Length: 347
Image 1: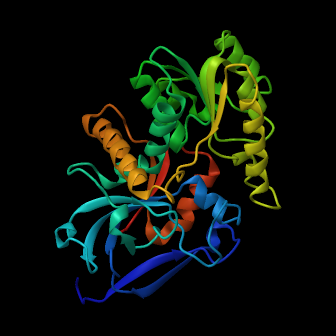
Image 2 (image 1 turned 90 degrees about the vertical axis):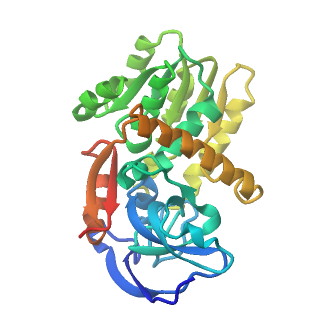
Image 3 (image 1 turned 90 degrees about the horizontal axis):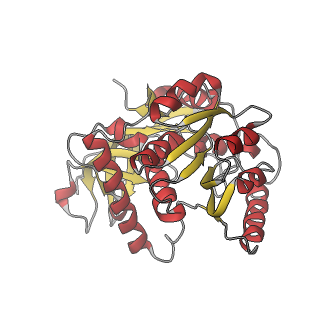
């Protein structure tokens, strides 16, 4: 442990504000407690979670004010009691849910995932939660075989663009929805694009896959999730992982999720050979933390191996300094870019 005082620059979400309402503050960071390390941020980013949090719509967000930031890649600069000093100077990734939009932050040593040398931190950040989510939904939840056909809603997004690439690496045909401005990108990733705003969207997908599809990955939720369910062939799997359609709706943030849970449960009770799952990144962590963390480490290692060998290309929409996090959030919410908006320390 070190006695050197560390000052951290943080981006604070003070309440339900527009992106330009974020506040940049500086404070003294407490010394790491037992089991903690100080992580100097090398890259963090904007996910859908922060977009919901600023509206007070994320399922279990903390009370305002707080520092957002779902995941982070950084370098250990100090360790607390009972933490191996050899971690100092190493680069690690961590999923923290909040707190990553900071130049330095305290992280539990048990939550660290080693990042291999030679992989750019912004590249790692772009496939951290996005890559873990995509890998687990494809390989652990849907278990789509080689030669299958899947639909990825939002194929130009952080999770979607990673899903497309992972599926193509497995020899799976992908139909990806996106706005027309992103169709060229979706084609380059290896998917057949469909305009997500087209009134006959699902009819077009059925024309492309008349026998049904093996899986639909749906982050949109809402009433249209029924259409996703109907696209499945017998034995197919609907993987729902969000309710983006309700992002701007007023009211209880949990109600859309609970309605979705009820709908998925009802479909699973039907004797039609199809399955419906809600993917929860944090499932099992509270009761089985050690095995949950091992699974995360194993899956991230697989994703980063693909990045290192060039098989999986991180989709970085932009790299924006921490003190300009308002611009990063606004850009991510504009839906004009493909991939993930990454936040970096700056000069």
